[in-house]
Length: 228
Image (cartoon, rainbow, N blue to C red; front, side, top):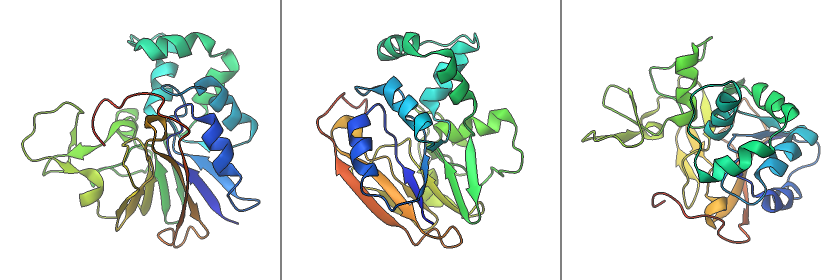
């Protein structure tokens, strides 16, 4: 039995339906999160994941909507203000059920990444939320926010030491998958007109022996906020 892990969908439901036709039968399907926002069918894609029993990791976009639902002081952007009112109680219940990470033998799945300082042994909420946003770290492997001015940032996957196993993640879009010794990044910017990527892992004891499948985006649905 294979595990199939999908990169960030962001409402690209047609591409998701297309790539699912290419996966092995009887696969266990997992999403790295960020099903919501940006693309043409965000709410429909979220319900599609639930209907098809696609195990979904919490993404930063889902987390933003659920925090708004909880009554937190959250500022939604223009696109999210259109999405949020369409979400129903059962949609929020599905989001609430999403874990911040998943560990399967030597395979770890997170939305964005982790640092060499993070241990996934009952981490507190403030640490788990880093898994949703992480991109760069300083020389001490501390999290750096998106618009930092740190002089020598390092991408977390380039320095990750493998202590939590082989990591499959999304969040940060790349033109092609980002391969590192202990990780692979599979957000290839479908919503930006590039590709939707899935990784097929036949054996979680050797998750680095993976296969990649991709479909092209049907169009560019939105403009990226930074070059990728």
